[in-house]
Amino acid sequence: MTIDEMTEKECLEVLQRASLGRLGCAMDNQPYVIPIYLAYEPGFIYVFSTYGKKIEWMRANPKVCVEIDEVKGQTEWLSVLATGRFEELPEPQFEMERAHARELLQKRHHWWLNALAERRKSAPDESIMPLFFRIHIDSVTGLRSQNQGGSQG
Amino acid sequence: MTIDEMTEKECLEVLQRASLGRLGCAMDNQPYVIPIYLAYEPGFIYVFSTYGKKIEWMRANPKVCVEIDEVKGQTEWLSVLATGRFEELPEPQFEMERAHARELLQKRHHWWLNALAERRKSAPDESIMPLFFRIHIDSVTGLRSQNQGGSQG
Image (tube, rainbow over all chains, first blue to last red):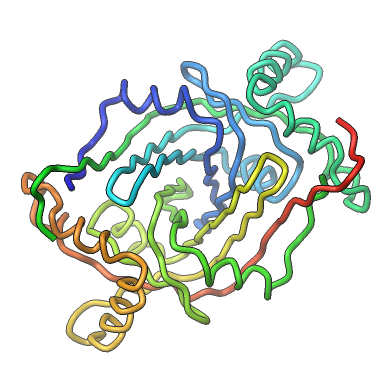
């Protein structure tokens, strides 16, 4: 097996087909990672979520990253990291962007939007408010493994 | 679907059976996330890796987290986050801990240890040095979705 850096084009192709990723944010240099459902378009990653710790953290520190990996086998995997800045899309001033985000995300995650709408009633009201945000992508990097015939353990 | 907090016991059961996770670290409040192979035992997560950006970052800032998720279906998933501190296991002073880490990890990741040993020859020497570290777990939290009959979209 070899491990090689991916080109930017290869990284963006992975983002294009991704629907599940892991969002990293940080506060006082303490990282925090959660799985997210996402939709990419050039320059941006759109995310639909509910209010929670991650939102507070990203409001305080907009530096974020999104990690996407595809593990097809034990020696066949890739991992892409998009680094960028959190941008919330509050109503009403981002109405167009929200509509766009909803459209992008609904193509892949209709069930998820529904599921969140049903989030347990015992939760505080604020935690069930749907929240759209996007990430301005500053850079993407990636590593990919590749099998080679005749490699030795 | 409902989303509920998991108990500490439930979170540790997930860690116990996990072999793949995502490690979060941070520098100057910029988060960085990568997939890792891991082995848990009470109090610690053991990781085998090669030298790279993440190691430099964790040496400078030992605050880390490990995220593990199990997505079985679109409305059946869980996500666990272990927060803790990076501790390197350099030779020779941590020889016993390294042997222990190797034993734990080899049970699950024999192929991975081999694969890293073959890492491409063109890489700088330092990048192919095997590196063991562990994470002192300070806390674990988790969220789990659950399907409920009769829920409406």
